[in-house]
Length: 447
Image 1 (cartoon, rainbow, N blue to C red):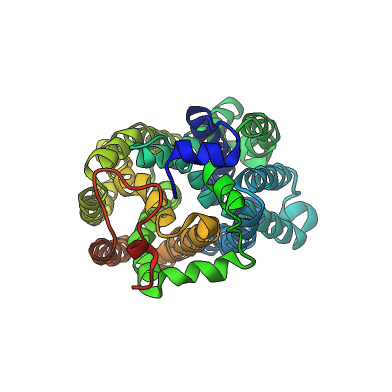
Image 2: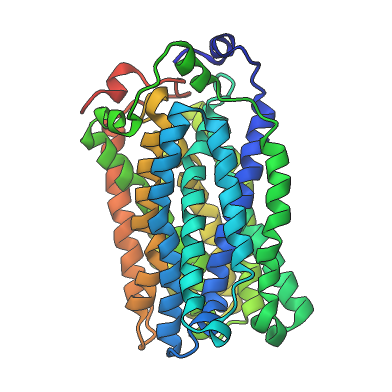
């Protein structure tokens, strides 16, 4: 791929990097708001609303199972949106994905509970969760590509990090609205029907996001693909030409971040309130404050990556996550509010070190004409193996005994796998002070 100025000429449209970066941040924030809103509700509300006949443990497991359904649907969304993103463009597919997420979340807020329609309540919940998953499956890789492919020279990691900031921003937005609604209504009213309000607000937020997203220009990289007639019929199949070793190592390198993040953001809420006696509002505030740390540190780390390369930063961050996972639950299990804040804040500071550049690492695995399809495949497979199953696996490991030791070992093993994958990956891929707009030939050939 040539540099941004050449792509501008090829595409015939002047890209606006800053506007595009903000648009991708706004869009991913709103989509992750919808997704995390569901995760918070699954941890605290849905067992009572949709699975009231089950025991507390079984109800929590059932609620987390519906959370996992969204992750299972994400690869389908990634494959479909990735295919059309490589064939008709990034912009149109991202608009559709945002609409799908908004519709899914809004309708979740309108579903009658189990007491009203019985079996059909969880069925409708699962179906709408699938809609959410498909929508988010199209968003994750596409937003990163849209921002990264507009990036000025030497700022590729910084711009690829803007959509990654949407993850903690969406969590903060979801938790704040969830918390404010809960405080204004009181626990009883909120648990009964007030939880629906944050979901219904999705309609308004998505409308705002669409106005922002429709104003951006198409990716210069995709314009160049069209100009040079490089569109392929089956981009996903073509993306496998990078080699299974490269694909496998990239997947291993990123899988732990998703698992750790969802244990921190979702499982810790349920476990902390039901097993350790923490106040629900205290934990929501603690997770939200930690997500703010996550958000504000992403630009710091992406600038570091542009100046010094991603290798040392990503491997060091992978090691740091492993260490913190070993101490997170021992601190959390004390029941001490101060130590719980330390545990949560540590996650907020360490997770972004690898999270901020993993989208760029995945994207740089593939050439532009198959980048959306290939990136979606890696990103969504990692999301299932990591984040989608993590709350459910953690609940099973916790069991009726209530010991978090099994959860700690689960996270440590996942982190060790990713650390090994990252070390091996950077032995076979290039890295430097600033990544090239197009991976060199040897970076995309079979290895």
